[in-house]
Image (cartoon, rainbow, N blue to C red; front, side, top):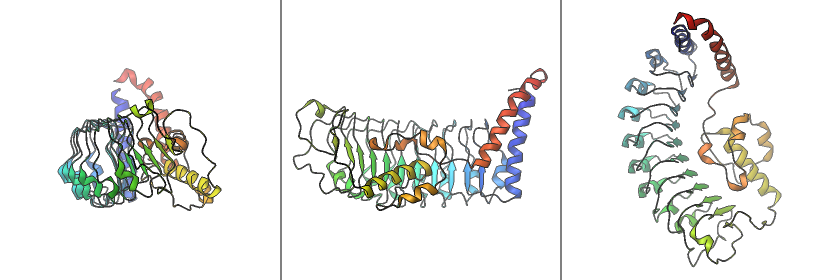
Length: 357
């Protein structure tokens, strides 16, 4: 980047922060600005509640950031961050946290002190284990740790009674705790592409369960007393690409063994609408991914402000929402338009500035 272009970009960043301070804005978007170091001016934004720093080149998180005590949403995904300060526990009001796609390699135990956290994403951070302190996040609704190196999850994690969305796909998990039924609010559980050998029987006691993805594991049998009858909300259990698919097995209408499924009886109109509402709600709101009420009013869907990217990132709802792609809706339309305008101008400026660098 030329010296002039860099100067323009850095001053634009400072101008955005200064405006946030002057107007006491609660929302500050600094994503995709190629920031390598967080400007000190940012730490004076004491009124900011939603701070978006994703898709930059930040490598260090200063302790000063943790003094922004009003933060409820913090996105740090897609940066070069290799550690978090233990003082992150000071962010007691934090509700949404995304630290995905950073070379962190571990979660510090202080994460467990974020007592109001509802949605937490730590996808592809090189994580080898989940600290037991995660069990202290009593309000956690959504947890995603896909694409890591996990071989197990701590039993303490099953104390998360309010957890509804859990995605741990693309890890190396071999066994699950026998107390998974303590996650009594579980709606969507994605465990595909792991090394699980035994069917997690205890999950079948989670009465709100709708989707259980176990495809591409090492499961060779179902328990003798396997029965989905008590799961009135269940839409599908996916067991494709497991050794069990190579054996003779009983026909379970809600269990998916092969690519082609015998069509199920058409669900009632109200249930179909509820499923549709759940799909749209989850992909539109991004984070936290909160399922709709059981008897959701489908008319509510039309009132939601959807953006195209949220719809494009979802899979066919029959196969379950790809919860790993659910993420915070980072920018308002006004902020997105402003940043796109700046992005269009900078390349033109660079042509004139190239000889002055």
